[in-house]
Each structure stands twice: as structure tokens, then as C-alpha cells.
Image 1 (cartoon, rainbow, N blue to C red):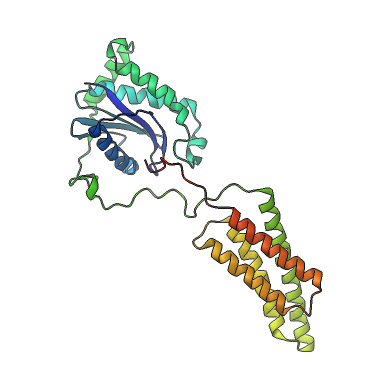
Image 2 (cartoon, rainbow, N blue to C red; image 1 turned 90 degrees about the vertical axis):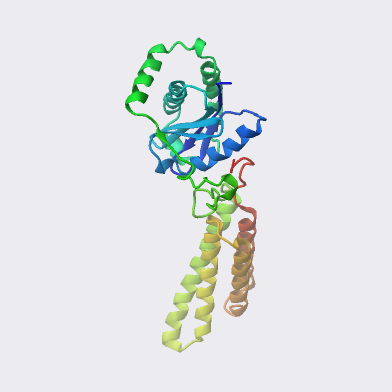
Length: 302
């Protein structure tokens, strides 16, 4: 049957899916071809702006413009002119509906899933060519395709000559060098500010100790303790702001360093000062533990 089976909108630079038709196609052949669509989505930026690829009984067609690609999967008997007219309509509607700043800053997959409503309506129209009224546009597209045919992508170009299960390319890993964390909370901001305050107090006392060392030859180990406390507090702020490997373990080690430095400085601080520094360190450690990496949606890698 000559129909459009699936369509999606993808950000070209990283393959992030922005929207897609919510079809529940049970045909195993279609599901298998969709896997090729996912692989293709990760290479869109390296390909020409209008391409087609054949896989079994299906064709995968796409066009790219302004950093966004519009991909569709159809039966191999579906006319190319209709396929690219369909993609052209998706493109015109998407770029007029959404601003580029929002497209470029999107983090989660399917951030514009509501665009599926337009995809479904357009797909229904193009699956029934007799209902199409854009005859002039079809003629224009026919001429354009004849003058500039779509680039034919081979499976070898995608490293798929042996099938999808033999690929060695890594799966899509995301778009940020650091793992994104959950949004800031008021308690987290307060803990970060208090940690900065403790770091500042330690730094000031450290410089005073340096002056005393130059004048009275005081113990240099106190200076080291003050600067270690400063480093630990600043590192807790860093751990709160950025996602890194072994983040929770590093926060506990930083808290331990804060406790050790204050234990060594117990003769230079009263009980309330010690309590304040240790409590702030514990509070910051708790906030680091509570601010976890953002969970990905179940279909993030789909």
C-alpha cells in the first residue's frame, strides 16, 4: 500500500528528535526500518539537504534547513514528488511555529511533541492524494526534483551493509559534556552561598595566619588547615553546580576534609564557629546528594 508510515522532526547537529508522529505500527518490517531512521538521524549534518534511502520495501526521505531535518518513512511505491511535498509542508509549518532559539536550546527529546497534530493531519492528506489541492506545488516540486534529484544514500555510507545489528558506532549519548542536573532549589542556592561564606572566612583567617607566621613564626600547619577548608568548601560549590563522575563520593570526601580541618583548628575557633562550619558542610553535602542528574524520558534513545 502506497502510504506515509512515519515522520519526524530532528535537530541536525546532534540527532535530537524534536517531534514525531505517534504511530503504533505493528508491522515488523516498519519497526526494523525505523531503526535505520535512528541511525540516519545521527548523521544528518554530514549529508546533503535532500536525500533518499531505500531499505527493503520502504523509502526513507528527508530534507534539512536551518539546522532542522524533516524525515519520513514511506512505502517504496509512494511517489517521490508527494514525499518531498509532504516534507516541505512540515518544514514550512515548523519554522513558522517555533523560534530557532527554542529549537537550539532544547534539551529533552520530543520537546515539540505537540507538532504531531500537524504531522498527523498532513499525513492523512498526503495518504489520500485525491484530496490534495496543491496541484501547482506538486508541479513545482516535480520540476525541482527533475532538475536537482535527491541524493541517494547507500547503506555502506552509514556502515549498515551488514545490517543494523552489526554496527559498531556508539549510541546517541546526549549533548552536554557534563550530565545535566535537576533544576536549582532555594535550599540548594542557600547551601552554596553559605559554603562560599565559609570559604571566604577560611581564606581570610588563612591570610591572617600567614601574616602571623611572618611576624611570630606560628605553626604553618594552621595555614594549611585554613586553605584546605577553603578548597573543600569551594569544591562542594562546584559539585553542587556540575554533574561529574563519583559526585556523591567526592562530596562526602570534601565534607570529611572540612571536618578534619575544623578539628585541627579547634583551639582557634569557639564551639559556635566550629558548629557553623561543620553544619554548613553537612548541609551542602545533603544538597549535592539531593540534586541528582535529570532522568531521561523512556523514549530518549528511540
